[in-house]
Image 1 (tube, one colour):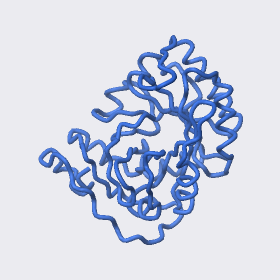
Image 2 (image 1 turned 45 degrees about the horizontal axis):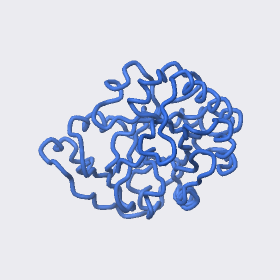
Image 3 (image 1 turned 30 degrees about the horizontal axis):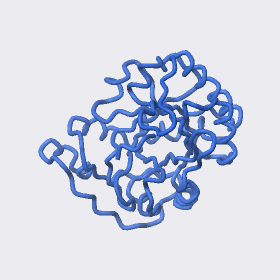
Image 4 (image 1 turned 120 degrees about the horizontal axis):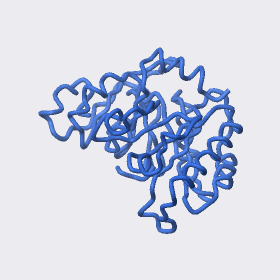
Length: 267
């Protein structure tokens, strides 16, 4: 996803009166039992108070990370509520995120459920992009499904085209099919409000959605769309992570999370 860099969750009910929030104090780092869900101990540099109650209803929180997160203490992040992480692996057909290997190994060592994502490049055919991702992201039982990140790229130095919606969906269908065949589970599709609407992505099948919506609940921005993950801020503050980070929630509670993993994690 493009870089768009909570008072503490215990204080979410006070957000409306707080404005900006101080960074949270990290919990004491201790081993987290495998599969356990840890409660979020996060902050947000630019919180949206109107979302506080909706965010609080979700118990399974995580992050996404790329080269912008140059320093992550994964054990500390795990102890403070990072239960899953989507990590940027590739872009287009010739770029690998320089922090991928470090983040990938660190998340695994800390017991964070991890998944890799590919940033779609509009000036390259989808088959080449899928093969590039496969080359760099191994299949591993228990990992989260792979993610395809599709959005407009108006600031790209090399590709700012906006192709017709039918072509975008055709490319998405190719990627969904190839990723499903290669990893044995359907991918997740990350997208933004404008890209979703412009390309009528609700017409896609065989994919779970991960939706960006930082100023409103997804049900308001993507009416009628079922979703698995919600990216609710890009200015998150997480103990163990230097600088801002995107924070996400899973759609259901702990039991639903366990069921989803049993059905959707890589076989």
